[in-house]
Image (tube, rainbow, N blue to C red):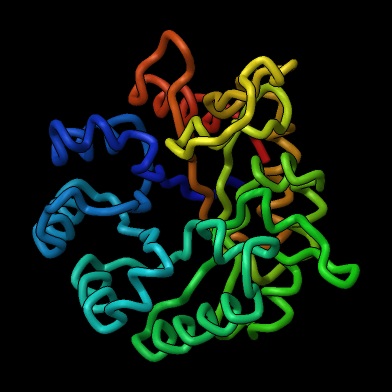
Length: 273
């Protein structure tokens, strides 16, 4: 069995700014079944939906910052409905909203509030994790606390298998843990080890000394890193996932983002699971 594969368009964000619709054509030509958005680069959502329909690409989901949801819930949901996505996704928490950065219970309350609005609109809210949710509060990971506090009818998982492993846990075990609550899974590969400055790879500065990176952390195309991808894919099926999403935050050194995206889908096409 194989699952349909989408590309998180953040992976090719630079190329999208240069030729939005041309990149969508290339994504389809590579063999992807759908896309996940991380902003529309100023494009009209209805025009984008029409283009995807013409190409035969599914508008699967869209990453929307929690602050944007809270500032204009109605406007965000209107755009998502125009775009035609099935899922809205909280993609990331700024430091002040994280477990060790502020009032995490308030963050949970706000995510629940957004989940209620999203569900009322006929969509489903997902939460995309990083590694910073793998800190324990009263003996429980913050990520699990979030999912325990909000019912599955209002919030589902978008487990990022790279960040689960960087956080110190087994992606396969976490997929099993959330069987039936993991409709969409991020398949992401990497090399190296967790470091204080690894978020600089996605534009977030740190005060860490680069020389502290004994084993340099870097993203890789799927199958070119340290992840046990075949086992993760089987776990996705066992967890009743409906889609997998390729995401590579930055291209492999010596390659461009589109080449990395093609390398990932080419690898996934040859895997039986």
